[in-house]
Length: 143
Image 1 (cartoon, helix red, strand yellow):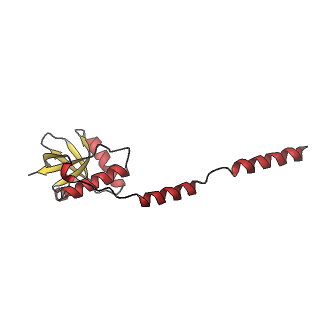
Image 2 (image 1 turned 135 degrees about the horizontal axis):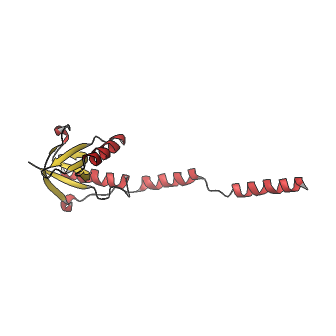
C-alpha cells in the first residue's frame, strides 16, 4: 500500500513539475521583441527646457556642466542631493551637482552642448529607470 502512495506522489510531482513555464523561454522572447523595437525618433523642436543661471556646487567639477543638462532631482537639502548623486554614481553615471541662484541643488546625470543630445539622453534615462525618474527634465544653462 505504501508503494502505491509513493508511486502516486511521484507521478503528481512529475505531472505538476512539467507544467511550469521556463523563465528562460520568456526571457529569450522578451529579448527578441526588444531587439525588434524601433528606436524612438526625438523631435526636439517642442522639447521643454528650463533656463537657469547655474554653477557647479561646492566641490564639483564646473567643467562637466555644459549648455544643456539632464536633471533627475532638485533638492534644498544637501544630504538628499548627495545621496541621489552617490546612488547614480554607483549605477555608473558621472553625476555633477549644480546650484541655481535660489540655492537649489540640481542632480545632473549628463550634460551636453546640443539640445538634441540632452533630450535623447533624458528619454533613454527615463526608459531605463521606468517607472522612476519620469519627471527628469532638461536644464539650459544661462550665462
